[in-house]
Length: 458
Image 1 (cartoon, rainbow, N blue to C red):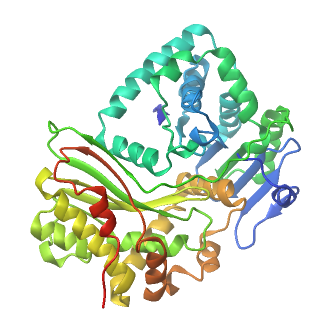
Image 2 (image 1 turned 60 degrees about the vertical axis):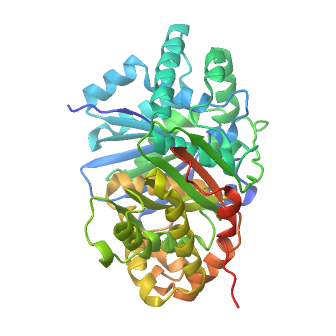
Image 3 (image 1 turned 90 degrees about the horizontal axis):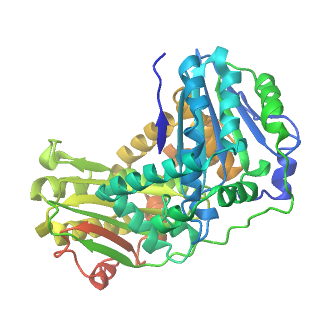
């Protein structure tokens, strides 16, 4: 992620193209979707606010890279934000600009007063259209990314999740790192960068999202005068193949570290699956805990009670990372070297209980937690803008929070049988992926972890 703060895709199918051909007001909300003539999608949400959040989302990242140019999307992000005129414009207009590159998309965002929406759109357009860099800028960004890679390697949590993707999706683009190897970064030059942008920064893979007091027609008019001049290349298309999952492990042992960082996960469906919400509730059922919390044996989560009373770890948190067609669901924890075996056993015991003995009283709190987290996604123009972009990117439409709850028969209607069904389907007797960094001598062997994914019952 790269930020400035100043105080003053996949080619869409024909059905999706028809869906976006004309202006459409989604039912029950003030969210409008329109597609420009060249294929750029514009989505707006009108709400009363003194500020407006704008996001420009591009379907790019490691999933659209190969082993030779892995890391180039992240490099382009750094180059785009390094221009002096961009920094000066942000400073003079009191605009906050930030960006992030993930494995499936790249997002440039601008938060600004309503009077500077036009300037913000122009700044965002420069990020994907302006390709004028000199060799000095490119070499400067290489040095910055080298330093960023060192800092990345010194962050055990980031390193663990990077390893987790590498082992879970080994041999596929989704397993590649966002930063990329330093050998690739050293080879990047202006020609390689421009060729990659020509192939991947196509209008049909760009989404402009606005959330604020600005009208839909005003945003579309400004998008036409900036992004509307991008020329589509119908010959440039990319069809991503399914991301192959492999149950496996990767361990980096370093006994000099005070604690071990471990992630244990299984393969689950992606963002568009109807089982997304039950799995999300199941993740909330496990929850999170750290040593600073009190409560001892009064925690709602069985895993939190075990960790608190038996000092199994310093911190744990359940996670669900959904992508377009696949996801990772599991638990990340930080623990003492001598307690890793017991912590892994308790995690798997909790998973098996969820598959077999889940009761309504167990998921009642998890349902309320899931509701709160989902509601926070649409709280304010910034969160709402990010959520709109993600939904349009993955599902080609955006629904209001009420519609989002209704389409899955509401989170409140999720019963214990639903949670047990999805847990049995994706957890019980499945091959997990394990990634660990630190003093991992006491971590169980993979075959033993695999044998803990089922119970022998009479």
